[in-house]
Image (cartoon, rainbow, N blue to C red; front, side):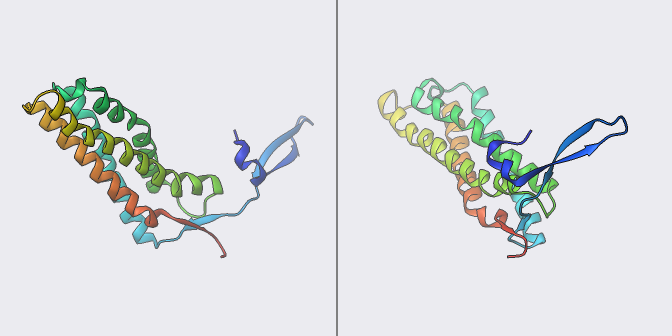
Amino acid sequence: MISKKYASDYNIEYTENSGGKMKARAVYSGKYYTFAASESEVKKAAIIFSVLSTVSWLAFIVPLFVISSAAHSWYIILPHACAFIPLIYISVVACDLWRVTPPFTREKSDHISFRAPKAALFTILFSGIATAGFPLHLAIHNPLVFPGDLIFGLCEITLLINSIILFRKKDLIASKVIGS
């Protein structure tokens, strides 16, 4: 199904099948895109995105299985949980970088070039809020750091650093119109 945003990139083509019935099909007629970076840089970006996405998922999941007092603070666990959706988008882009070969449609270009930086930015926001909540948690509740709190904090900082790196690598996945 074609979304409304990309409907103008398609034309409807009618063909008659052997039974005499008319069959409609959408044919892409919009501009085609390619990566602005070289093929070797795109492969490098695919490796970087895949590794950082995997590490980010580990940094997201591990704190959920560790007993920590920080996980009971809503201003730490809620932003941490909100990073779930942006991490999915980052993972999808990492998979797309391995599968997509130029030329590709405007829809795929938007998914790769614009989705990853936005998702990384939201992950920076959420993990930054959760990381900033740790000193507040220690000041309000108790100055003792349990092993689970240390693991949770290290995972949150890892998630923040990975997101910053992914956001800074957005130029490796930028796309351009073919022929311009």
